[in-house]
Image (cartoon, rainbow, N blue to C red; front, side):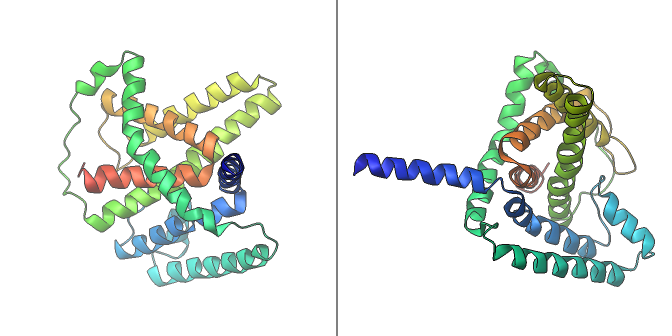
Length: 253
């Protein structure tokens, strides 16, 4: 009985890791991030993540009309839920694994900073962490603004830098240029992480550049890319969002 129970637990664990990576399950799992972010945009008067090109485009189309923006997203949400309901009858959705996915992401979120610091120390760049970041004159963001920015970062930055940019670079190198999978992966992770870090210093809301901040975010991009590759988009998005909540809300940075 003991061996049978152990085999049963192994099957259950394998089932969880497989089911949590299925596209429909992963997409539904990140739906709360999307909804919270969209509502947060309304509550904060339009605060958006820097790579949220879609919301910026919709604001331009609707002339900044919040009601029209909310109505559009409500229609999108209803349509999405209809599709989910139809697919659910085919057994392609696994909602029972979603709480475990969030718990798994929370564990990773607590370890991101540790992993980044280990990478920095291993590469001998730890002295850069001693450089103080520039202090801006802008007033500190409110709690709801911090939450919206954190959730927006988790959803849109993983969508942009990991799913589209890293995935696109890997496809271009491996499938089009014919490079090996290892070198394609190394290039895709490196370039996407460099761009991910650099974007945080651009635009009106960009942070003043310091080498310490740039290097830290580069390795954070590497860590998120690893999580994305190993566990999929949903886990990476939740990990990123919860990490930012931990840093901005709990630690107050």
